[in-house]
Every structure is written in C-alpha cells, then in structure tokens.
Amino acid sequence: METSQASPVGGIWKRALDVAVSGTALIVAAPVILLFGLLIRLQDGGPMFFGHNRLGFGRQSFRCLKLRTMVSNGDVVLAQHLAQNPAAKVEWETTRKLRDDPRVTALGRFLRKTSLDELPQLFNILRGDMSLVGPRPVTGPEIAYYGVATRYYTATRPGLTGLWQVSGRSDVDFARRVTLDTYYVRRWSFVRDMMIILRTPMAVLRSRGSY
Image: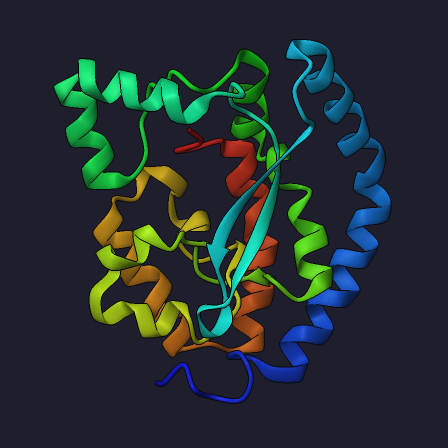
C-alpha cells in the first residue's frame, strides 16, 4: 500500500458515511460544545479550542480540533515535569502519554474521561481532514516512531474513533495500538466501520484508558 494512491482507503462510500453522520451529530452536539467551551473560558480566560497539527492522508498536515483540556502553557509545564521526573520521562518516551499529566485541568480530566473534548473533530470530518473511523491522528514528530507502519497511517484519513479506541483506548500500549491501526487499514470494510461506530459509545461509557 502506497501513500501515492489517488484517494484515501474507503473511497466515496466511507466519505459519504462521514458527511452524513458528522453533519447530523454536529446539530446535536453544538449546544454541548458551546456549553463546555464557555466553561473553559470561565476557568482561566484561555481559548475554548485547542488545535494541534496532525498528519492526514498523504502526509498532509491539518489542525485537529479539540475542546481545550490543558493549561495554556502546557509545553512549558510538560518540559519541567519530565525534567524533574525520570519515571514520567520514560513513560512519555514509551507511550507518548502520561497517566498523571500535570498539564490537564480538572475540567479537562472530565472532558477526556467522557471523550467530550473530541466533539469539535466533527468539524474536521466535515472538512475532509478526518474520518469517523480510522487510525489515531499522529503528529509530524511522532511519525518517526511508526517505521514501516507509516504508510498505513498516511493511506487514509485519521479517525475520531477506531479499532484501538474500542479495544481499550489508552490501556492499549503503543505497539498494540500500531498493530490494530495497521490491521484496520489493511482490512478495511464498510461493515467493519459500522461495527466500530456502534461499539464506540460503550467504550466511552466504560471510560477505560481515558487519560
């Protein structure tokens, strides 16, 4: 599978599902996004949304949107925390996540636990940056960790949900997550997308690995 292909895995059928579901979901989710956005502003006066550069189909960069769950100076806080905590540095270098992340606010922990912070990504889906189902969105610096699996991540749009999310979320270690993502891309089917979408609400309600 090469990233020079003309269109993302799934083609027109996957895109049609993305537009239909995300458009409907945005109508329902808009009041929730607005409510929590206002709470975030009241919390510290910072922006409601956080946009981070991620790689999509064909290595194209896009701004992946989320409700902001971290302090405004998150990069500085993270650097200081890793410098002072060797165990946290190892955890970060191994998984690119921290179970006890000092950057995350109290409201942010709730939003992450319920996955409500990811609702603005419905806009990314409508724009064509992302898909409802796909591999985890990765950053430019992160892609170096993926080796030969990179071609699978750039052969399709990254997903709001995916096989690794419904298989344990952050409880799944990095190697297992890459295995699940690459399997999804190699064995894509419309039926599998529907099954993952149907399994996602239960995975969120269980709130496993939500940090």
